[in-house]
Length: 434
Image 1 (spheres, rainbow, N blue to C red):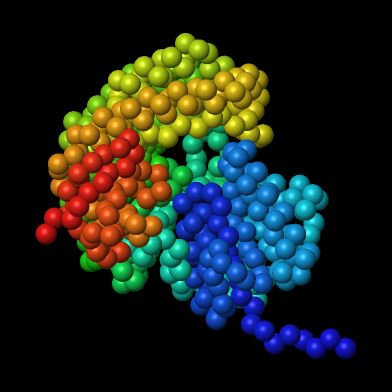
Image 2 (tube, rainbow, N blue to C red):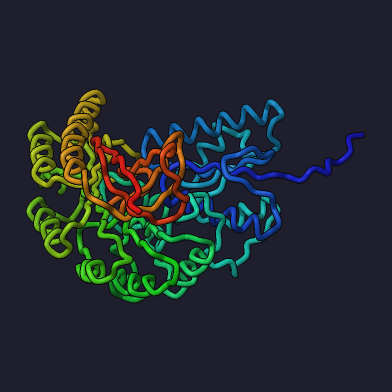
């Protein structure tokens, strides 16, 4: 007769997708740790929890492949259990259960208590935002709300994340204080839409008031804003940004397109003229602000003329940071009713052309930084370099500052003044200033 194993289970959490998923995985891990569980992130464990992304085709494919890889490991006896959570699971649970039944259980984005129960852990309400961070110790993603009420035609996020729900200011301040005690110096504010913050709780857009509260948290030195929607942007945020040195002069504002006909079909609620005026207002209100945006090419009906207009506008606006995605035809979205009429190769060509223009703009802007000194935070050591960032750069998506580790020693998580000696299109090379 087989005796019951006495080995301690080790739970390995695998995170796919965006920073919101990183945050969710960290909360899950914090809950597991509080229940006395042995939990790791993307290391070896006999129980695997895959936090999936279901946003666009590439992300869905990566999620499915990761599930299949771990099922193979389970069948080979390397794993005891495989659980799946996150956006893909929320959106396609019945399909996944039918197609990959070897998974022990699937959970949606709002089923954390049920997932914990399956892992023989208790959901602890008193763990207010306490979590096991997986990022370098000096920064943390800081989710201020969940869900989205925007009607964008191409986006499946409301299907997976539900309606907009803000977290109260006092709860967020407490979370920030806990992170600061653990050595976090930079909060990267994330949400499906930062600008909607507070509308449900306070009946007004309350992002500025939240920022006023967060800057008072001792130990937090940088606060960075990600994912702001252009329509209805609360302009008082810019006044706080200009006044408060802790708030980075940085704004991530996904604009998606600029052709009026495409914007209308995308249901973005704005026009080229309004968008351009808004960006000019940002730059006037906060001189030197770094603007990051993301664009979609190959949207249904995007003509060559629409694309040429977008290209010309990118050249004129000279965004400090820009990413470009090809359109993904997502079922149950409003745009799914339209014909996906731009060929895949054409989508890729258009994306490459935009990024080529941006690469040149970024190179020119970076050359202007040579000889200048910037206050940077050091994230990590990689190979022969210490890797840092300026206030103008967010982790993983923006420029990095590289310092020769064979010549200089820097401490991870510390702020240091670095003088730029050389620049490429997306990286700066620098030396510390004594």
